[in-house]
Image (cartoon, rainbow over all chains, first blue to last red):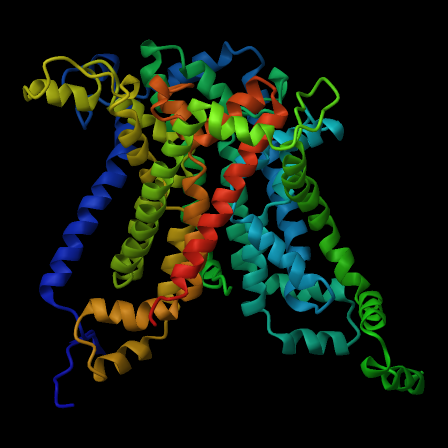
Length: 291
Length: 315
C-alpha cells in the first residue's frame, strides 16, 4: 500500500479525521457538562450564605462563600436522638467489617474456583455469575424471612453478612486471579510442599493487589451509602446516611445544611476512588464474561 | 511411599466408575471445598434460598402470620388479570428498562471509547467526572433541588424568567414529567461498573492490531471500532451488558426518593415499588413473591436475550 500513514507522537494513528475528532470532543463536552454540573451545583449550594441560597434566579456560582452550612450541619447533629457519633460508628464499623470480611471470604473462594480443579467448582462459579443477572430487590422479602429465622434482624450482622456474600466481588476476584496468577508459580510452590492455604496467602494474594482495592471500593461505597435498611429497627443501630437524611429533611430552612451533608457524604467514596483508580481499571481489564 | 502413589495412579480413572472417580477427586481436593465453603454458605443463604423460597411461596397465600395454603396459580392470575396497578407498574418498568438499559450501556461504551485516546492524566480526571455520580451516595437528590416545585428551583426559575412558563411547575408531582425526569436521573447515575469495565477493555487491546488494521485498509474510526475494537473486547461487552441490564431494574430507590411513594397517579410506579408495597407494607408475602418471580424471570430473560444479540458483534 502506498498510502501515507498519519502519525501522532511517532506512532501510526490512522483513521482519524479532524471532523471526527471535533465531533467527539463536542459530544464528550456536552455529556461532561451534564454529568458534572449537578455535582458542582451541590458544592456551590453548600457554600452559599442564606441570602444567596434563596436568590432568584438561582446562581451557579457563589459570590460570598461561607462554611456556615457545615457548622449548621454539626449543630443539627448534636441535637439528634442518639449521640451522632453512634451513627458514624455504625456506618464505619459495618463498612469496615463488611468490606474486609468480604475481601477475605471472596478471595478464598475465588482462589479455589480459579486455581484448583475440583468437581463442582465450575458449576458454583456459573451459579454466582447467574446471580449477577438479577437485582437484589427480587430477594428482599424472602431474605427478610430468612434473616428473622436466623435471628439476625436488628443486629449489625444483618448488614455485614450479606456484604460478605457479594457476588460481584467474587466474580471480579476470580477473573483477575485467573489472568494475573500464573499456574507455573503456583506449581513450583506446591512442589516445594507449600499447602494450598499457604500458596493462596503468600503467593496468590500479593499478586492480585489491584483486585483487593477494587473489591474494597465496590464494597465500601455500597456500605457507606447504605440508608435505612429493612433489617434495622433500633435507632442506635441505624446508618449515618439515614441519620443525615433525617436531620436535613426538615424542609427548606435546612437547604444549606442538606447540601453540606451531601458534600460530606460524597467526599469519602470519591476520595477512595481517586486514590485507587488505576488499580481498579487494571482489575476490570479481566472482568470479561466468556459465556 | 512412592510405589504406593504409583499404584494408586495405576488404578486411576479408567478402572473406576465416574462416580467413584468424582468422589476420589472430591476427597483429594477437600481444601478447595473448605475454601469456597464460607462464601457458598452465605451465597446459598442470602441469594439461592431466597430465590427458591420466593418461587415456592408464590404458589401460596402466605402472609407472615397464618399457616400458608397452597393456592397454585391464583397469585399470578390475580397479578395479570385483576391488578390494574401491576399492569401500570409492568409497563413503566419495561419503558424504564428499555430506555435506561440500552442508553446507559451505549453511554458507558461510547464515552469509554471517546476518552480512550486521551493522555492518561486527563483520562483519569474525565473518568472521575463521569463515574462520580454513581458512587457519591444520594447526591442524585440534587435533581430534586434543580427541579424543585417552587421558583427557587433552577429549571423553574429560568423557564419563568425567560417567559416560557408563567407558573412554576411541580416537576416531581406532575404525572407528565416524573417518568422522563426519573429516566434522566437514572442515566446520570448509571455510569458505574460497566463503564470502568469498558475503559479497561479498551486499554487492554493490543495497539499493534490497529496498526495492522490501518495497513489493511481500515478507512475511518467507525470501521476500526466495528472490525477491531469491539470483537477484541467482546467479553467486556458481555459483562457490561449484564451490569447495565441488572442496574436498569434497580432504580426503585431513586424514584422513591425523588417522587415519593407512591408516585403521583402511579406515573413512575415500577414492579420494584409494587413488590415493596405488597411485601414490605401489606405483608402479603405470597402475592409479593409472585411479583418477585415475575421480575426475576424478566431480568434473567432480558439478560439471555442481550447475550444472544452480543454474540453476533463483529461477525
